[in-house]
Length: 586
Image (cartoon, rainbow, N blue to C red; front, side, top):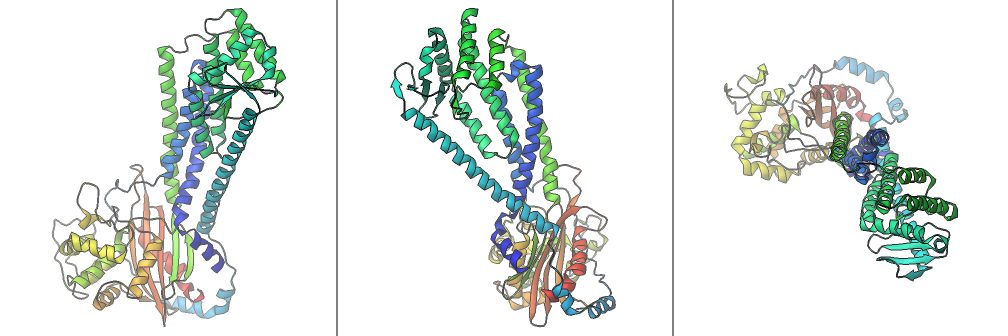
């Protein structure tokens, strides 16, 4: 157990990013498939569209956009009325648990083989993919640098001429004429080009200069950057290759425009001769002009039969419509994948309160979520420290019909601190924070170091005093919950001793059959809504367990589908059933 806990400690801050990054990677591959399918159909049925370089570059941009939309954290501003859990203190029968604990030898639990939970395996996998991506990105960049060095070496070995408006270098090597260099363009011409007819040589050079005039180097550089960032996506390479194909066709079209058929045939013959002569393949995205068998057939076909009306208005409309459809398709993937990402969130974290040693840490424990009713622990500490709360039953705040109760019958009664915590009464907590005031609330939360410490509330609504912890601005991760609970147990917060004592008392501690006393609080909240049919809930159970001189703090959080029983109580019951009974083995 200790070995994999130490690994988790190294990657604590990477868990949410790693999970989103893995899903964004999968999402952009799926988006790439959609983009490639649409652009392939365009190339077959609408060749005038496919011959435009913008189609292929924007196709790459669409895939990158799908990647970023999934990668970016979702806002928590869009929400419905919050589901507030009501505590149910029905515990498993002590006798049954006592029998179970006495019949099983203590050493059996200690000697049981350690198993890795699905959440732990998921964390390892996503973090492994993040590391693999970094390695692949580094390798891809090294390959680009090596190719650039090869081109620079070829350029330095040749002789400069003044035959063109860019630096032209003749080189005695069986290569294809090629233009390279984003900031300092250079044109490499093989010496064997002197054996071509004057018209052929002039058109080949003009083709390369047309790349320069059309700013194809800038277009290609953008495609290279996008492909490098998503090096793992095969469709990015395909789209970038098609971008080069469209650029070659565009230059051929411009060079041959208005030329007689004899010159067109001579140019086609020159391309075929060049393909036969080049023996040093430098097929690279960093240079233009490399003649390949894959593109030669299309270029010859264009030379023989020039395309008509490539820039007509209907072609432009069709291009925009096709790109809009591709973008809409990729964006449609984002909610589904984001939903899958959220549905995988789960964490169980246990830490020794005295030493801070991690005893168990499974899942995405660095992911922040709304604290929901677990924030009542904070409200209780602030209330008792400031004197707003006196004891377990004082003050009693009378119910007013104007208070929101969301059909909870237990909220439509006069309430004291004990029943407030038991039923997670939202309006009671709001009355406490209202009496506390915005400044004190902010100072307490910051002094506690609680989560992201943002009690501003919903943007533009100025409701942080009563709403910030209910699916609004205030968020906290299981790791941060555990750190905060350790401060409570070790009494390291800037509050009075009475605040600690009374808060512990109204949490209704329960003693299990194995001798551990549990002080816990549940919480239920909704995630940021991606669509109106979202049926998921966050479930929290946080607190501490004591036995003798030892105390263990814990935080359990899961995001799953809404069920008849609120997520918080379900998480609590599962924790007490599957984890709390094994505390002696930690």
